[in-house]
Length: 460
Ligand SMILES: [Zn+2]
Image 1 (cartoon, helix red, strand yellow):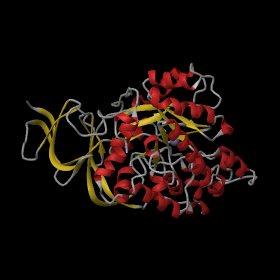
Image 2 (tube, rainbow, N blue to C red):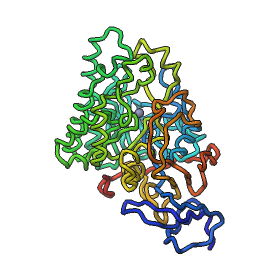
Image 3 (cartoon, helix red, strand yellow):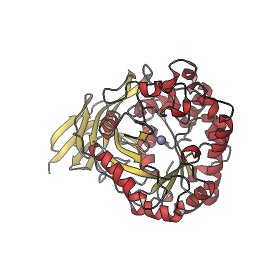
């Protein structure tokens, strides 16, 4: 038998460890993982000497082509999926627009499916709730599962734009999540603390965002939701944890919370602090939750090293310099968001000092398990989809704005990181090599996800 693709002489990374091996692909799937000495015939072969093979990364939190008031985020699915591939990401999960009525679900999905048709990589969506919905928790849960999107996002803040879900709805969803088989995702900031803080500012600018949305607003909300999830044995995923203090507070609850609550953080909270907000360029550092102090950033890095973070998303949602600049003196009108798609691997590999077993858990295996993509994705094994990131673990690099983004700046410019993505395979096809994207647009497909039960996999 002749295989379609051979990846030879590299080191394969699984949850159980790293070992030298050859990987043989037929069609879209991995068929054989053999010892280095055992070479099999293949139509095309790539020498991976000195490199490591990781399961293709999954970014469970992106906003591509997101319309936010007058502006639309700079990267659409075409540029965003190129950026993804350049960083080893072979699966993206974006969000439907918020809905408040069951009848809106189909249209919300159709809109995003249209937006995603140019994606080079496979994609799925989370259902997003608006405030004061007409449906019950059970109705929206069953509908989301039936629509093959068993993950539902709520906001605990943004009451001013009608997106805040009330605690009763959140409690009901958490109580149902494990029974029905879905994940509740929460943007967790305490709305009332934020509204109280707003009273102190007559016209807040970007310089005020750290005190407008203080750490306690995140910490108190995350603690409350985690306690509900613990009590109800829920499946809760906290998006974009911004401060190490939040993780520290959860740790004081004891270890059991981790069975019922998974934490996500993003490269911007691990690498950047709020010092730039004091400068004239600080209007670019506007994203939500806001950047924190350097001490909180360092604490977050140490929480990651200790294994208290389960997953890395980017919350990729960049806006152009001009779009932020023209609103710099009026914080409520600044389009919030920044771009970090493409740098997750080097960021996490640097913080974890090249521990690829844990890097691949955070960037691939855990998000695959958490969001119902495992074991087709999130692992390199015979029978899994041939999504593979081939990386150099040790090369040093300096971040610059990617040639693939449509954004005109990067907040990470000049940061030195360790590790780079050399070659990427997407569903058995060579998708990225030597800095070039080789996969045409519209190569990606919608991934239908089935019910999710965390106890069936040992999510970390
Ligand atoms: Zn987001």
